[in-house]
Amino acid sequence: MKVISITPRGYCKGVIKAISAVKNAIKNPEIKKPIYVLGYIVHNKFVVNDLKDSGVITLDDTKTSRIDLIDEILDGTVVLSAHGTDPSVKEKLKEKNIPYIDATCEDVEKTFDLIKNYDKLGYFIIYIGKHNHPEANAAVSLSKNIVLVETIDDIPNNIKDPVFVTNQTTFSFIEIEHIIDEIISIYPNTLISEEICSATSQRQSAIIKYNKKVDLCYIVGDPRSNNSKNLAIISRNITNTKTFLIESVSDIDINDLIDISTVSVSSGASTPTYLTNEVIEFLKNYN
Ligand code: SF4
Image (cartoon, rainbow, N blue to C red; front, side, top):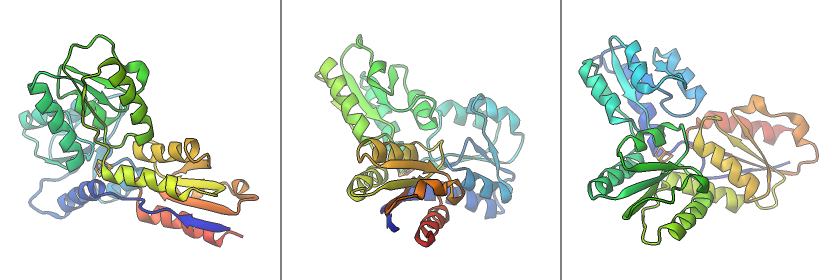
């Protein structure tokens, strides 16, 4: 069986920065312990479990907001995740005198700055992103004149000009085109700043480039990782390749490998390298 290891794949600069921020905080004696993270530091449970083994407490409950999760913290230091954070969360930490380290990715920060700037200029903002994703939640907290649009059905038709459009950094470049076209058809004078980060677009483009004459594709990533899910969707829908999103090598069902002559492997930006390498090695050695 031929195995194609798609590149680029795996960790991006923002994920490396966020994980390093937590690891440095653990090692630094001047940083108050314990170390807390609100939500997953990056969307991968193996990363979160590794950090837990080093004493890091991840407060994660999809039914409780990050601002309410702070009530569980009495002491220590909080690291804020790569996805960005609602300013009211930072305010509450300051009020409670709990120090925090902001590990927001600079590409996410850039979209937040755009929202704040165009908000000040009086624009109504359409933010293209996923409902209930921490990056989108933080983005929409930055303005009162903003709407979150995940599909064309979410686009309101009664916004007053001027309109500014930006997006979640890990959105699919295929899906966004369609949504932006629809927005322009309703609001022809819209100002658009498409902000899919380069790590996301390079990983998405690589799937299209390498998934030619491939019988099966594995995307290694956490089901909560938006960029991993998008890689799987692009593989399935754009390259018409049978695709599985798996968390680790133990998710491979060998029945899926029957009659497969070429398999490709990629991984999301929050997937540790060792998990992808284990999948590649397993497939290379599979007889
Ligand atoms: S996927 Fe892009 S925006 Fe998200 S952490 Fe990585 S580089 Fe930053």
